[in-house]
Length: 112
Image (cartoon, rainbow, N blue to C red; front, side, top):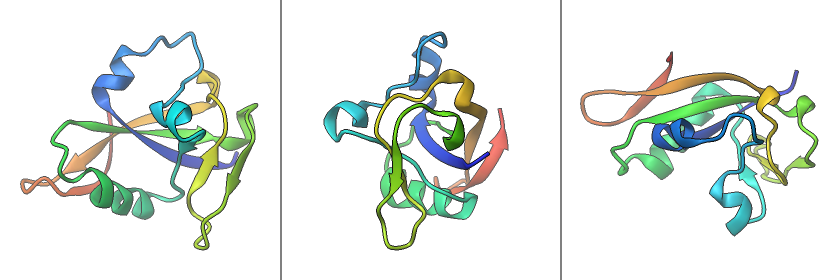
């Protein structure tokens, strides 16, 4: 298994058809789905891009070895995979909530 994380608002996950592959909005606008390797990098990514958004967020653990779409890592740090197609539901191994402290800062992951 080649695990990576994908962040999304909890309301988006709740509204999805679980019988269909997952298609993040970035797939249509940018041509790929953003992912992040490692829990610490995931928290840093959430802080950098989502801190001002007060909605609850979830992290999907995706098995990159189980998806049909092409994926690649193009950043110099080697921790931000891009998935160039939808993610099959059976490749989503876990869904966890992103934890925030009282100031709104993201601090980690917790079971749903």
